[in-house]
Amino acid sequence: MRVIAYNILGPEKEHLAKANGKVHDLTLISNELNFSTMHYAIGKEAVIISDRDVLDRVMLFELYKIGIRNIITRSRSTDHIDLDYAGELKIHVANVPFDNTLEGIAKQTIMNLTQWMVGGCTGDACQCRMECNKKVKYRRYGNGDSKQTDQQI
Image (cartoon, rainbow, N blue to C red; front, top):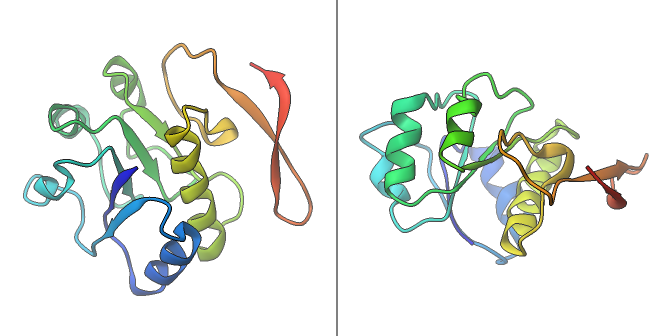
């Protein structure tokens, strides 16, 4: 997938690059996502944001107009995203609900992108507010690994 990640701090860059392993066309910038930096997302399929990037109705609609259909927040919280409006626009939204370390957040972020790339669901990370018959559950193991279960929701 063609992706841009906003609000990337120094330590995050290395972890995201390593987790990605050149699977996705990933652009990392330190700028926050706002109306003056949104143009960097043109031509991308997904944006990765932090909890400091607020996606209200206006911002979501502008992202939709430039072709963004997937959003990942590098946080557990989604309070900074209007999830209901994202659902109306059919924009997929995921968070990183498991490991809260920089390495864990990076791995979950890339796993979410990869699931979308192959037409799958992000499982427990899915924050979408639309009907979807692909939503699956993932089982977490003590070693930090996760595996898709057979259960469809």
